[in-house]
Image (cartoon, rainbow, N blue to C red):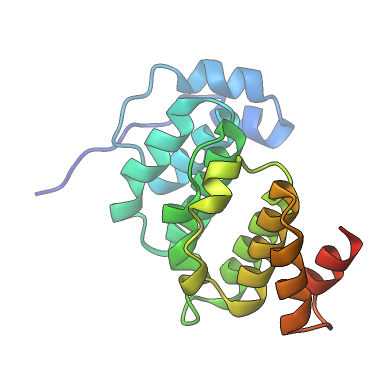
Length: 171
């Protein structure tokens, strides 16, 4: 049994290409799920700082196929923008067996969000499931934001030649 997906309205593609995100939001507002994964990505990009984007992206993941990594990255980015938990979307991309390009993009997204991520989200980071260097960076950021000198020294003591140690030493 096939599930019908919403048809993009005329003019949506032109608005996306022109970067007219307000127009994209207006054209996409009447669309109801299920949306195709590509259309979901476009609508979510336009709605990034709104709760609708996160719900749309997560609902589209099961049928996303090869677009799943892009949807997960967009969902994590939307979650960070909303102050929500990005880890459920990021963890599959940070797996050592995940494709390299989305894995690198996920690492960069985490690094970019370390300074702005809510403290409770940093504390909830699944450190054992993160790549070791990224886990050290998260621990260093958490220690720095808490003002925990002992934890900062521990990060520096583990290894002196990575980004986490450099950040901890600067703090």
